[in-house]
Amino acid sequence: MATDTLPIYKKRDFQTDQEIRWCPGCGDYAILSAVQMVFAELGVKRENFVFISGIGCSSRFPYYMNTFGFHTIHGRAPAIATGVKLVRPDLDVWVATGDGDSLSIGGNHTIHMLRRNVGLKVLMFNNKIYGLTKGQYSPTSEVGKKAKSTPFGSVDRPFHPLSVALGSEATFVARSVDVFQSHLKETLKKAAAHSGSAYVEILQNCNIFNDGAWEALTEKETRHDNVLELVHGKPLVFGKNRDKGIRMTGLELEVVTLGNGITEADLLVHNDSDPNPLYAFALSRMDTLEGFPTPIGVLRGIEGTPRYEDLINDQIKEVQAKRGKGDLGKLLRAGDTWEIRA
Image (cartoon, rainbow, N blue to C red; front, side, top):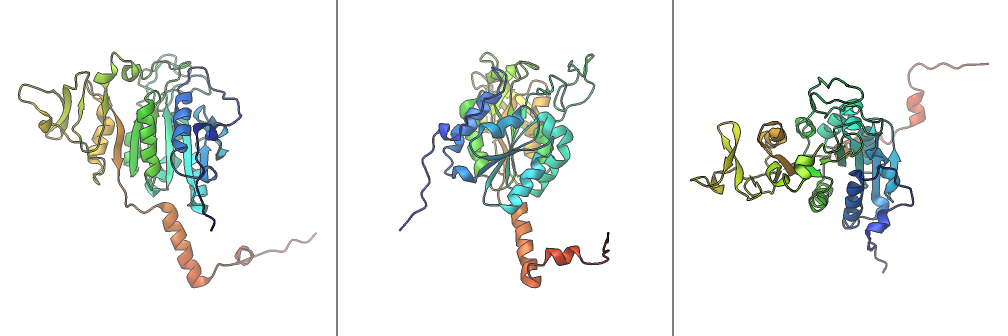
């Protein structure tokens, strides 16, 4: 009897023969490598993967993945990917996008894709700049950012992507860093395992137009005091000597130093499956507070929320059971029609 066995994949099975056209040293190389390695381990047939992208450096991703894919138009990747997932819910559909593509022209599509809980995996590369168009400030650039489009400094307040995702009712929200390969791969695996919308912000360095945007998090001398790795069920501890933590005082988060009567028992314990998004939202704002670290890992990952594609397809089946499959020609000719004669 024939069996449907899964081929044993290697990273090279997801590589293509296309010339990779990113600048030398770009963080996108690290993200691509991580994705290719993770895909080889997911137990999914290569032909069941689809990568959809918009416009930007990150959106070249489909060319470099030996899967099905579609390089769409600016900001519309979530809309196209939603369509793919609706008609083929059995496929693993991933979206590669950037801070400009997904939070500027594509902001509307992003929030509605997340609130609907479409079963897509979104990788949002955040380098806080427009790289493909050569260095304009983006929706995540900091106030005062001097760029080609803001020579005297940006006056816009930036979006905080994970706060936007949580405000859109996303059921899985996470963050990682391009050069933290082990952490990034683990985060991608968790996103892949999630049944609904999975939104992963990847802090990525553009070494040409915004070099060092995340160096406080990536440099060996500073990273331990500036990065808080979230682990479900573990207290929020960070620091080079693991001697700092986060506790809640009233409704406010507080950085404390362990010792002198303060122990890990006084700290917040991470719970990424809390159905109430308030805790995750507080984490998403933590890096905006002076003296606080930047959390990485899964902020929120809750299961059980119905997926949009399942609801829509169930609705279609229910209507078809009552009324039949219908006739498109009859529908188009319904109501008032006109016959045009030469």
